[in-house]
Image 1 (cartoon, helix red, strand yellow):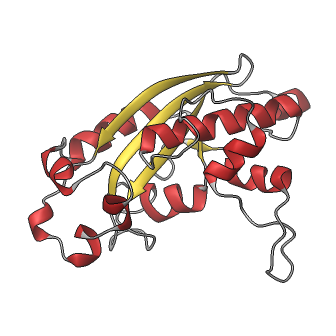
Image 2 (cartoon, rainbow, N blue to C red):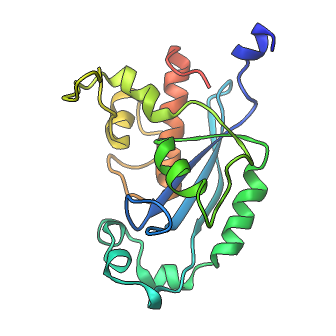
Length: 202
C-alpha cells in the first residue's frame, strides 16, 4: 500500500445506526430499526441512503423484547414492528447497499459486532469497517473516565453532536428521537465536523 492510499478518504462512507430490543446483542436481542446515511467527507455532505423498521413476529416475544427501552423512549411501537417489511427483505436491502463499501457507526462494537456481524444478519466480511465515530469523539470531547487506564469515556451521541457540531444540520431540534435514520444523520455530522478539524481519519 502506498502512503497516499493510507491517507486517501473514501469517496463515500456509509454510517449505520440500529435500534434494538436490548444491549445483549443477537440472538437474545434483535434489530427493530435500521438507518443508513451516505457521507462525502471531502464535500461535507450527508444524504439519507436507507431506512426501515425491521419486521418481526412480535406475538412470539416475551417481556424482554416487547417491553424494550426503545418502545418507551421513541415513537417506535410493537405494532410498527409487526407491520414492517420482513427481516429477510430488510437484510437483502442493507446487504445490497453496503456490499463492498466503507462503513462505520457511532459505536461499531455495538452495531456491528453485537448485531450486524452475528446471525441472522451475518454481514461480517461483506463491507469494510473504518474508524468508529464514537471512539474518535472521545478524544475530542475529553470527558474524564473513572475507569483505571482509560483516559476518556465515550460520549453519548447527543452530547457529541452538541459539543462538536456547529448548529443543527441533522435537524434534530436540540433533542434525540432515538430512531435509526435520525441518529445516523447526527453521527454523520459529528464525523464531518471532526474530519474538518483534523480529528477524524477513516
